[in-house]
Image 1 (cartoon, rainbow, N blue to C red):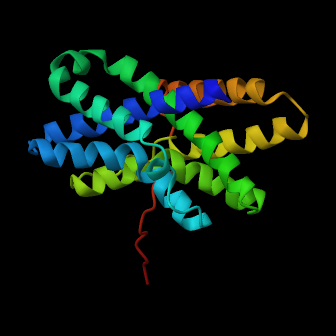
Image 2: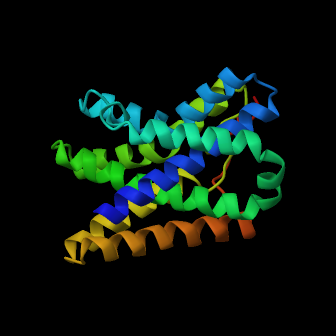
Image 3: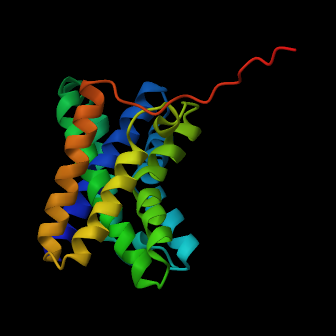
Amino acid sequence: MDLIYTLDLVGTFVFAISGMLTAANKRFDLFGGAVIALVTAVGGGSVRDVLIGATPVGWMQDTNYLWVIGGGAAFGYLFQAYILKLRRTMFLFDTIGIGLFTILGLNKALSFGVSPSVAVLMGTVSAVFGGVIRDMLCNVEPLIFRGEIYATACMAGALLFLFLQQLSLPYNWAVVVTVSFIIILRILAVRFHWGLPHVEIKDRKG
């Protein structure tokens, strides 16, 4: 579990960078950038914890997260020009992050006695709602509403993880397989432009 905790902090760091870059693109001041970095990194987990009654929320009980978020925000601000040249690397880390947060959120929800179906939703909330809050605050259409295979990949990964647990696969192996599955699915979806159908209002004649 120490490895998972470390990777969780890495994902938090990357999401904080993502938040700062979005804020910089919108020309926010430093305080605004720090706020966006914070909500991007811990927004999803906070929403999950409130919904399942795990309060105070996780990052309030472990100050390491605040240090990591501060570091990610500073890194994103100071090296934004260099980071923007590594979009593929950021995409990969973001995908690893949502995979890890999906599993961590799923397991935390299960530990609070919710049903597996609700836990799948909570895992997805953990992974993507930080980005949703970031985009809403920055007046950007959230990624999960644009038809991309994003939240759907998290839900599919959560279901796969539950299936692997039923097969009694060791926890660490289940994590590796699930995160790999989400990464591959996201890469293929972007490469081949896979997406969900759009909701459209059809004209009614007569």
